[in-house]
Structure formats: structure tokens, C-alpha cells
Image (tube, rainbow, N blue to C red; front, side, top):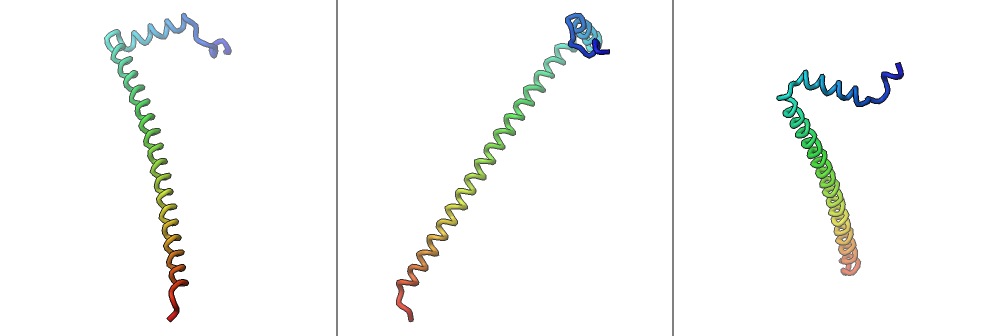
Amino acid sequence: MMALMGSLGSTELIIILIIILLVFGSTKLPKLARSLGQAQKEFKSGMTDAEREESEEKARAVEAKAELNRSETDLRRSEAERAEARKDSPSS
């Protein structure tokens, strides 16, 4: 039982390749390999696109947070200026 679960040797790989060749035929095998290669390329491209979108989203979030901080700072500054102006103006 344990012998069946071991690694594949060269004889087993040759038998598997012969079976694949018989099932798919010699004309469809290159097409199958090409389509598998294209699928792998598209998968990698999709992963790269997803990573790029994620990093752009993080950059937008950081930018939005910085803008919010600037807005809060400006608001506090204008409130302080109004409070200072009220102190400086004569009371009626």
C-alpha cells in the first residue's frame, strides 16, 4: 500500500504520457498544451492586475485620509482665527 503512494518513477511517467497520447491523440496534444499555457498566462495576468488594483486602492485611501486631515486642520485654523477675531473686536 505504501509503495503505491511513493513518488513516480520514469517508467510510470512514460506510461502516463502514452495514455495521454492515446486519449487526446497526437493532433490535439499541442493544442491542449497551448491552451494550458494561455490559461496560465491569463491567470498570472489576472493576479498581477488584482495586485495593481489593490495597491491603487490603498494609495487612493491614503490620499483621501491625507485630504481629510488637511480639511480638519484648515477647519481648526479658521475656527481659531474666528475666535481670535472675536477676542480682538470691541464688545458692543
